[in-house]
View 1 (tube, rainbow, N blue to C red):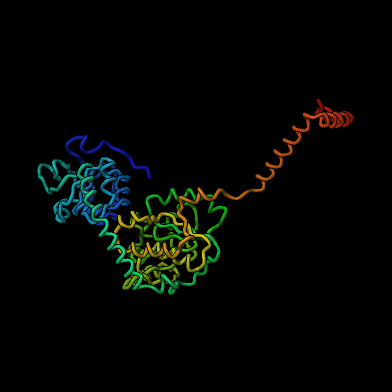
View 2: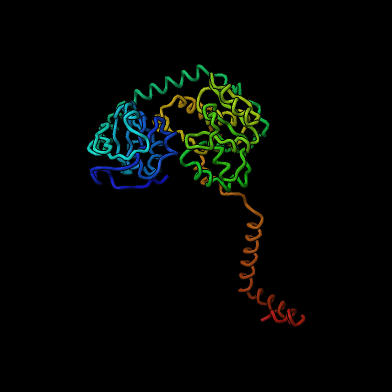
Length: 405
């Protein structure tokens, strides 16, 4: 994703003015942001994906109730904001949501949010140099963070070995999967672009298309009909979402799918099933901990997919440490299980050149025949053949005789 650039805050004016847009959940706030807004969030250790979305929305400043960088691990979000010239006001405290009003005009100056003539809240203004120092300190804590991640992974495997090792609990879907390629589309900032790169692969290979939460809406928007939608119960809000940026799936995408699998954790089953029943969408349920995109990968693997292409879900070590949510253990273990079947969408254009079509072969044959004809024409034997052909054509009717030089 190419990030828009602005003058760095340190090189711009001493104050930044904009409209306050605030919500504790960054994902829920993103769909309301407009260029020139000041985003007020409560996001400890801002991750890369959230920072990319904030920059893409065009905000001029981000006010965080929590620390941008706590020092637990080197999260890349603040570096991206600093590089794009977005002003950051750090660790202003949770009272900011009671002290500011959504939609109000404000400015950030000298480390404070100023409304009118009053300094409402204050914090530490982070510049690129401050972020670099904090990131260096966080990198020193990376070893302990890796130890914690390893411990959580082992605990996850101990709690749920049947699903990961034996595939128990995975529903027997009606869509034939065994031996076929499967494209699993999860919501993400680059999902649309990655899906565009796969158009030829999808058109020629006709894979099973699996939409994960709002990834199903991305498939529908790209004029693909999802065979299976795997939706987390927490993405099925009672209000009937319409494919929002925080990953919720729309009613339209649920109806467009051939079949729906509801992913639930403990205590979520009745909530998710209620909306699907109200919509008249028949579904099967898969109870498992972890991220919904991992459940979709397991479904494809257990049902014998020949190849699994992952769209929108990144799972490098840096991403796992950067995100730091409860599902990172399942993400790591799922990719260990899927193993060589899994390919990232960005790699497919490098590995797949497309099918050889009949007209390709005919064109190659024609070029070969012409090359042989030209080569023969330069020899004495070829000239004798051409003279003989010209003599025969000279005796032909007028229209054909006119073709002979």
